[in-house]
Length: 501
Image (tube, rainbow, N blue to C red; front, side, top):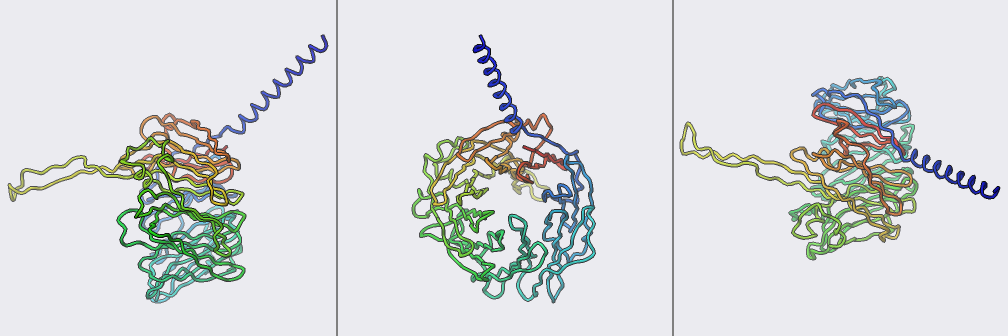
């Protein structure tokens, strides 16, 4: 009898532990969703961006076409704490970047003085959005260079360093001048990347590592190309801060042309990832992705691969009716590269297609000045389609670890695909793709999670129509390891949605 009772108690204990573990897992996987109040944005502000979150709150930047800039600070529940227009009215001043530190905001701007120099300056904005009186001069450039560009400012991934650069040209040379600053805004390195044939060169990527080393990728345009694969090669340049040296290398292949280059750097290692689309213009079946892993200190190749896609790689794709599978491949655009902790990486490519159709056409039959004059009129419609996402995990040696296909179809007209594509969220043990399942009908907002082994879970996060939301996923920003903020917009009415995992 005692034995039977012990068995019952053990069974109850096991059941209790099972229920407790289920509750804990459920709590870990649950989301908290916050919504800001709706607001009508003044017409003078053409656009906005989420700058990020620091100790003072979440910072939103609104900007207009005539040098209007306004900042807003939101608290943890997305209530507006401060909102103020930044007083920049001088037409000779142009804003380059707002960057967040731990407890304030840095404003970088260019001051253009005719027949003299262009100056890059910086001022601090405090927690009440007051602009400091002191302006720091970070850099300057003489106006005898052919340059209408401002300065550009970037953080390292851990925000411990800043790089400021400007693009210049003189005679037949193309220059990128840069200064590297530490967190105290002291210059710790400077140099110039120089490349010839300025008329066919484009700077496609500029990255700063946590240790202060710089990676730049230049694209060489193919003037004979008639499609999106319009680059004949790339040049990579790296600057080693410690040794004060520049190393140069070339990415090219026989009969190859390239498009859609994306890069990223590892948070802990001096490693960079370069990936783009490619095709062989003599062998139509040789089409897919090219990727390269390099050492930023030396510009030496760790691994590289031309990853040709085959028809079977697209067998899960059901969102397009193409003449052949190669046409499907040409619509794929690399959207995201995520470094793996072991030196490999994950990348995502999305099917994206824009085409124009004629809605109405005809001829007017009467003209007051000439009754026989024919006055044609045509109405057009632009259709935007964002479809399947191909996700690949690549090992450090360049081999494929796993592949996953997110099947979706987002179709809209005359909105530039504003509500299409996806927001990306990177957790410690998973990656998430958040997207509107259908732009016009069901309002289902999807959370598609992939774990490190390539296994996935697809679930509905919310119903946007019932919540009266129009989520703009391509403007979303992940602010920490648990939080992503996504704007919702309908005409000039906006609000922000915060999802906490």
